[in-house]
Length: 167
Picture 1 (cartoon, rainbow, N blue to C red):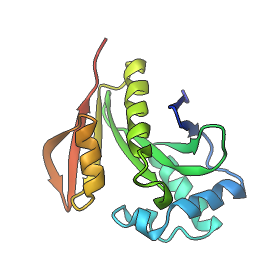
Picture 2: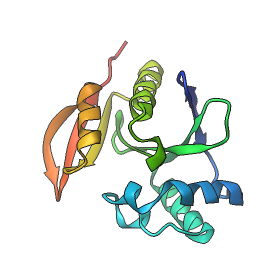
Picture 3: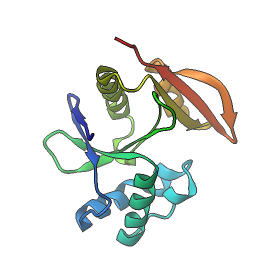
């Protein structure tokens, strides 16, 4: 099942196929700059051409679900959201925005919308997010949205959990 959701400024749509056109692949390259991917896994690094963007896309989609984040009514790509379900009800989330969109409230809006949408679907019971220990902005964002730090920490990564309501 694919899904999409909208917030006041953002439209988030699932990418269902790893065979994307060159415009999409160029947008991947534009978003995945060295500053944006600094603390992310190796396969996020050096995505600087359409062939490397295509390989990144295949890798990401083999691990879970990918969503494109765009301004409502526009085709400009702001960033991406990633969902990967390990156990029934437990889903790991990842998110990133292009550097020019930092500090404008988009990440808060994006994740709040994601939580609200997923909570209304009643299939996922817990969200898990891993954040680099020096990514202060994301740590503050997760706390602000009600994520609680879990006891597990792994090689410079702090994990946070968000328990969804079961209605």
